[in-house]
Image 1 (tube, rainbow, N blue to C red):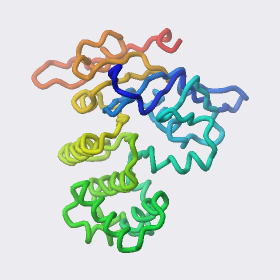
Image 2 (cartoon, helix red, strand yellow):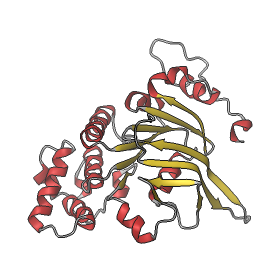
Image 3 (cartoon, rainbow, N blue to C red):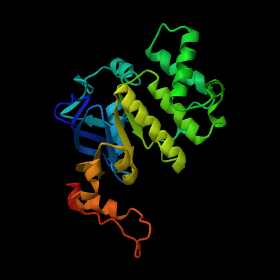
Image 4 (cartoon, helix red, strand yellow):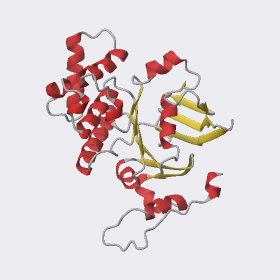
Amino acid sequence: MSDTTPALLEVEDLRVSFPTRDGGLFEAVRGVSFSLGRERLGIVGESGSGKSQTGRAILGLTAPEARITAKRLAFKGQDLLGATPAQRRAMRGGSIAMVLQDPKYSLNPVMKIGEQIRESLQAHQRGLSSSEAKQRVLQALADVAIDDPERVYKLYPHEVSGGMGQRAMIAMMLIAEPQLLIADEPTSALDVTVQLQVLGILDKLVKDRGMGLIFVSHDLRLVASFCDRVLVMYAGKVVEEVHATELQAAKHPYTQGLLNCLPRLGASRHPLPTLNRQEEWKL
């Protein structure tokens, strides 16, 4: 984020811990710090690196038994850790929204898609008539490149493809016009063609609405091509922050290891490269 861009989100020394069976604590996120303006920030790392837990802690979706601490965790200057449950609920979906990884587990299987999106809208914008709410939902579906919103409005989640289900989830999260969107692996379950469609939708919405976007992924190449900045996480820590255009020149050996593991057409990959993890990176 540039010095002249006001921060939407400020995160300083964020830590997320979970109790273990022996009475100790396992620290899943360890001292993460960054700021976010109206830009696209990518967070990458292996499974278990803490990237998803970072996003959930920001939104307040961490498991109840978890312990969350931070020197500062603020959205537009408002302290998120000090907010009441009612304030967090009002902010969740209204100011900050999160698109989860797989729509099959995020959409209610016994409610029609249009009804679910309208329920999300009316939770944050009361006083809308039934016809006004429906028109807003149809427009939201059209905004995410669904060609026949009227038809999709009446369908159940099992009646749509994975790509259309993911677009419906994006519509649900964006219908209340949040200023920050956290997208947790939004394209991992999609084929390459649909991935590009979803990324194009997110890119257009960020530009048109002036939103901030946190894009959580394990796909380093995808993040490098889509985001403005990249945070690389390992064992709960940020080991490197780099501008996306300078990712190939990253200096940390873990980032270099991730880059080296990417497939390359026409290049010999025998033996296959592996990551050389070091204990001191966890300290």
